[in-house]
Image 1 (cartoon, one colour):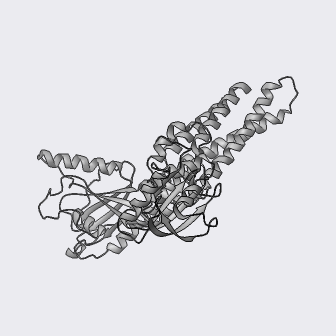
Image 2 (tube, helix red, strand yellow; image 1 turned 60 degrees about the horizontal axis):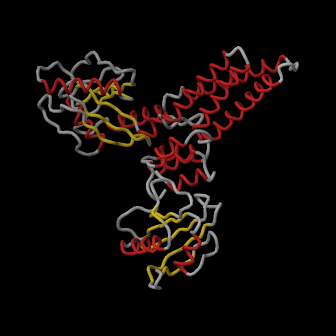
Length: 435
């Protein structure tokens, strides 16, 4: 992204396609002049006003609700405006053409939010939460994004940074005034605080990736021998025909994926090839992929025919497991720990869905401190923890101070307080145009 902060930008903030209203956002130093030219003057700040929009020749473009949002009390921190237009294509394109003619330019992806960050309206963690909120598919994703947008993560990291700065100041005092007789308990208190902060960062990192799992979604692999009804079960859980169902063994030869919502968490159900020894090269590759998906999944749904036994399970890679005894409509009883269901009749599916939803919630549990939501955060915090560990081992104030300084720098990269220019383009390029 090439950001030209001095420019005035505009973009359609509402979705494309047929609709009643289209919201055009404007932000930049000449936003007020654009309103003057479009509708003959600016409304009272932050109060919607019905105005006729005209082009430079006086032709009426639309009758729209207009909002004037002078900075710094605006989303971007700049003078801004919103035009609530009738959403016809001719209206939107006509207004856009006039804005360009009057000196504005189309915004780039994420540019409104990037300006909000650069103008101090939000930190980088909150800016990322805006993108997560726009992309949220489920209620739990929405709640996590809103919690992050409210500043829960940023406040936590800024609190840690304040503690680091205080410890760093104490070490600098030891370096600058070596001949002063500082109280011996000063260094002891610093080491105690350093250990407490190191342990707090470690606990934060050791969260089972629950925030990242919720943001990205979970993967549940459905595995088992051939002809136990795995594909039928996936179709029943998804509520639609995802996989081909056939009485012939080996029908499913590749991993088929479908997205569902379980307990407010987005989950990808993966239907896999039946696990068995086979001389068919294609089917053997499907079995290999099935085992690989089971090893990498967040949870394994192991399906068996209720009339048969349970074979030795493949490597689950440490994933949780739910045992399902399918074809309960044909008789037989489920072994201990297994849920009896019938994908054909729907019997037991409610209990299975409830169990899977509970597992999904457990894997993404939002209780406790705000979780990490991105690999970028985790990498920076791991470096912070490493530097804190180094500071704890340092024998000299100079070495300890350097490790504390590097820890503070790594922590600052999360919120955007230091060293973020190389990652801004990547973050905001993933936003939609109107944000």
